[in-house]
Image (cartoon, rainbow, N blue to C red; front, side, top):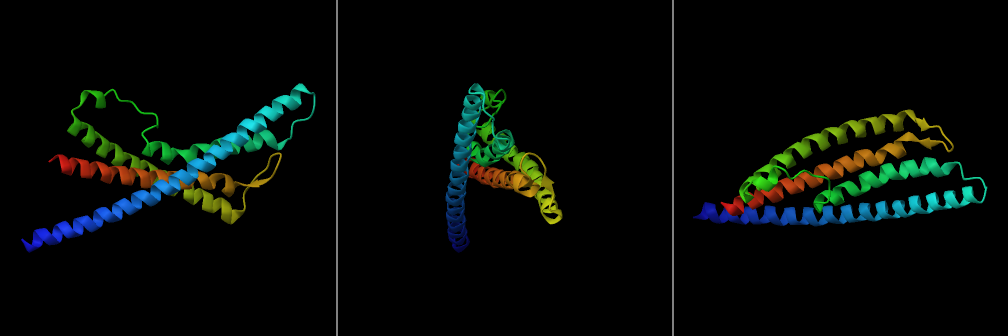
Length: 181
């Protein structure tokens, strides 16, 4: 009897910790998504201004295309985890539509394991490449010289945030599976 009470107490603390983790992760994802939105506004405004300038036979700033390209990369990785949490990422539901609810949860757990593996590996690789570029001071030489680690840093950060979201989703589905038993 004492063991069961102690186990339930420890499980409760673990769940409280996961709820805090979930709350902080959601906050970080919302901040990232906000900045993705700002970058999207920048891309829209700079593209529209370039069109107007060309129409008026004026010179378009050289940096416009370059920074729009960077912005599109950053938008992708700033918003990816936020989209994953809300189930708004691209997915195929051909298999999951045919499964019972328990089967969908098991499939989601497998999806979480694969997502953690892939995102963990890609976060490690891109983090290593970004760090290497930072140490060697590699530059992206175009209209405006930009340190390449600044451009690539969001890729590592985005994959790491996706890893955390897959981790969170994995444990959310484990709890669902246990609650169904």
